[in-house]
Structures are given as structure tokens and as C-alpha cells.
Length: 248
Ligand code: SAM
Image (cartoon, rainbow, N blue to C red; front, side):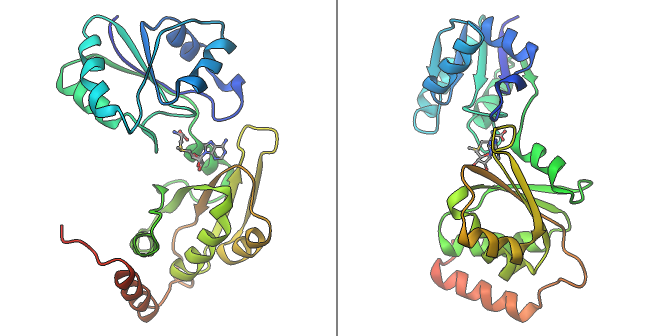
């Protein structure tokens, strides 16, 4: 029936598109897509022709009310370029407003790079924190890493290949030399997961940045690896000097 359908799509291997996801895409009245060119390729793969509307960070505020209005009597499908919508991708506000409007909301679960990387890393999975992309600016970045350092859980980060070495080095400095793993190109031809410690992975990727898309998984803090308070205070002060924190 009419409503909002959140459809997960492959993160590399088209074979990971579930039959239910394919049926939802083919049967939609309209597909809200992050990049319609990317979704057009997926539709071609399953031989479906469905009208699409771009829905991304730059037009979301204008497009959202129109999509919500259509959900009353049409099947509206939300996809992102790859993986699960809303996970470091647009969609949270669409679901929030659809919920407020009393729309039927259904999810078609599927690939997600964060969960896939957790299954590969060989690190504890009983408690994990999804940290997504770190802030780009140096100060905010250091402050975020320090804050996460206190969390007693495995940490999961999204990163681009080119920045992996520098990010791992910064983590080693601020989190201590924890066990970690880097998973890249999951489900694609050059899929590779390398495990080690933050320090030796930082050294490895400083020389040869991994190509493509990367998930960094960092083990929880161990008693022995804990960073002392003085080091953290000094790093936090440096971070605040670079970018003063705004009052809440
Ligand atoms: N919504 C997506 C999901 O469910 O995983 C994530 C979208 S986010 C904009 C893109 C990031 O996800 C990449 O920078 C990378 O960190 C990670 N990623 C996506 N596909 C990947 C893959 N095949 N292998 C490793 N990491 C991947």
C-alpha cells in the first residue's frame, strides 16, 4: 500500500540487491534518490523504469514536504547511492516528518558498510559505536576522537582511502595503540581487510593509501593501552585553541 519504503541497495556487488528490494524499486510510484544517475544504473540492472526525484542535502528541505504529501496515496521509495539510507546518508528528517504525518513506514534491510566491516574485523561486536565520518576540521576532529576514547565499545568510522593513514595516526596518538582493522572495497573485486594496531596500520597506510572506500574499526579501550590524562588534556587544549568550542 501507499507509504514510505526505505530500501537498502548494494555497497559494491549488485548480487547483494535482495529480491524484495528489487521488487520494491520496480513497483514504486516514485524513487527519492541521492543521485539519480547512480540509481538509474541500478534500475537498468533490474530492467525497471520508475520516475525518480533527487533527494539530497542541498534540496531536501524543499523536496521533503512534497514527498510527504505523495506518501498518502503513493508508494515512495527512498534509496541512497549505496548501502542503507540514513546511515551517513540522507533520510533521517524524511522519516521523522513521515512519522509525524502518520505515514506508513517500511524498511527493506540490506547492505551496510559499517555492519559488514564489523563482521570482518575480528574485534568485539557485543557493544559498538557507529561514529560515521569524523569532522573535517582539525580541532573538531581531535575533540571528537578524544570524546570517543572514553567510550567502552568498539568504534566504527567511515573514511576515504586517501585520508586513512593520517586518521589512523591521529587515533593512535589520542586513543592509545589499540587493536584495529581497516576494511576496504567490501563486496568488490579488490576487497581487503587488514588487522593490526592503530600504530602499525597508520605506518602501513602512510606509505600506500588504500584505494577506494574504507571502514576503520577500532577495538575498545583496554586497561593497559589507556592514554594518561595529561596527554589527553594537552591534546584537548590544542584542539580548542585551533577551534574554540561553541557554547551549547
Ligand atoms: N549508507 C552507506 C552504508 O550503509 O554503508 C554509507 C554511505 S557513506 C556516504 C560512504 C562511506 O561508507 C564510504 O566513505 C566508506 O567509509 C563506507 N563504504 C561504503 N561502501 C563501502 C565498501 N564497499 N567498502 C568499504 N567501505 C564502504
